[in-house]
Length: 307
Ligand SMILES: [Zn+2]
Image (spheres, rainbow, N blue to C red):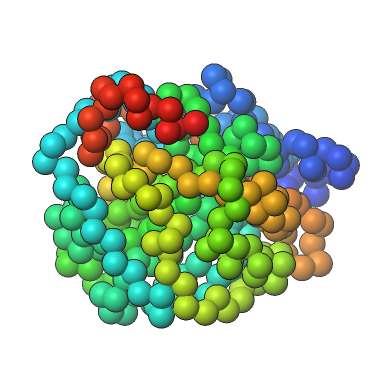
């Protein structure tokens, strides 16, 4: 039976669907996967269709996500602050990709983008999306000192100086720059609520809805300290074209807002309902890479920020 068929025909009870990840992975500390995707190894009955194709890059040396070891990250005083300039008008719509929900932006002009930080060029904002868990103990793709957050935001940008369009940049050297922001449970997030309010309209795969003007800089933390490393996309085609910029400080969201993410479905209208949860890739080996920090990593006083 192919993975795709297995996914469509698996006969999980409702309770199992609610509590068992669709493609479950070992919890920390066994979260590490050195060679193959855990999705393929541990869930032959519950594989998401996204992972029925190639799930690893042969010879890949800079795959994402990774565990960030705070103490092993190296402060680089040459790392300047990231310049973020987004135009709310370039926000197009939000849609259910069948794996996560994604907000698309008009990238025909330079209106929304980032530069500075570790980047040599200007990168245009293409889209942002989230990854999250079925439970609060898992959900983020990256982890910090082995700690997973319940969700992670990715703002995806492409190098508009070196490349003509997003598709070219995905497979190109220094093609993409992705800002990662951890979400932790806490205060209600007013800006995020704008999206949460729309989610019922895109419950099923391929559904889309208008967002109106939306400036995603309000989803970034107040403190802009970051880690940066050379990595890859965390969904197929898993190309190693990404400069990752991971914000040190998480943003707070209310439990009800995270619950709204979990009310979405992997499945299309008319298909057996599959909860959209655990849409994160297993950790990948660091291999011969360094993680650079824009901030002094030895200051114990700031370390409490990660929880
Ligand atoms: Zn992502």
